[in-house]
Amino acid sequence: MSSTDSQAWLNRVASAQRQACSAEDLRRIRDRAARIKRNGMQAKKAGRLSKTMQVCDAAWRSGMRSLGASEAVEDTEVRYRSLASAASLTMDSMQVVSGAFRCADGAEEDEEQLEQQLQMQEQTMVANGTLDSIEAATLSSANGATAAAAEEQSLAEVLRSLEDEPADSEACAAKFQLYENYSSVVTDARRATMSLWEEVAGEFDAAPATKQHCERTIQAIDKHANLGIADDPRRWYVHGMVKQSARNARTIDGVLGEMRTKLELLTSQTECPVCLEPFGTERPASALSCAHKVCAECWGHWSAMSPGSTTFCPLCRHEEFLERILSAA
Image (cartoon, rainbow, N blue to C red; front, top):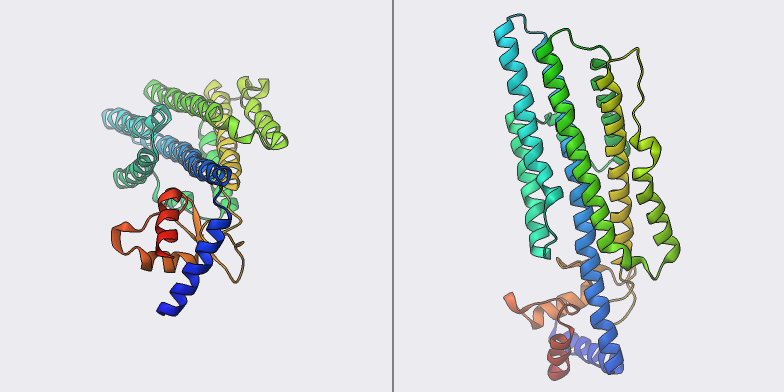
């Protein structure tokens, strides 16, 4: 960038900012910046809770398949040890991951750290065999339809293995214990989802139709069909309990995904906070780590004006940004 280009940019930006520099405008900009940042963090939280539910779900299915493989071992003593080991390892891993559902609300830095912890825990589960590597790769797939189809197929396989009550009492106990652990995780996920909605509901006050839709979706988690258990005498009773818990887990995951989408829409910006011109093909947006956006041209000039660690988001620290811009102009 030439000095002439930079000066022309600076003059243009300073002029635009002066025209939008009333006390009311500054308050509006500060409020909007805070709201966008808050919604961005809440969207991340909804995404993390959703991923936590998916990882626990996949780990539970992997655990059930491991128990099925252990049942086939002929040596009684080896079979018992194998059943106990598979159940214990899976439950321990699920408890570590599902701890995210019980985390207290924190700052943005805490949310970033929790996301990193979840990624590390997922890698550990793949390494110790409590999470199937193929399922883990599917969870990370950008193709939601493919992931959903793979999950449905995996669940159907597990449910088939639970249609008949195991003849071995040890296998019965291990499978029921793993179901109880899974049911507990789903309960924690429900509680975390309800808590998150209480936290974010006010963000939708300006969009009552969207808020009402979200509320109906939230209420669907506790509708009678999701709480009852179908008792089919042709199958082991655990089959119906597992099927219901899995259905509830999918409902909760869907609610979290919808909340995340809606919150991400609330973080959308239509104009650059520096030059105050709308984003578009000729003015593409650059997303910052704080979830705010600046057009590529302005970010390039602003970064050149603020080299190294002194570069900061013009929305997060708008008054400081104004002072620097107007002084330089």
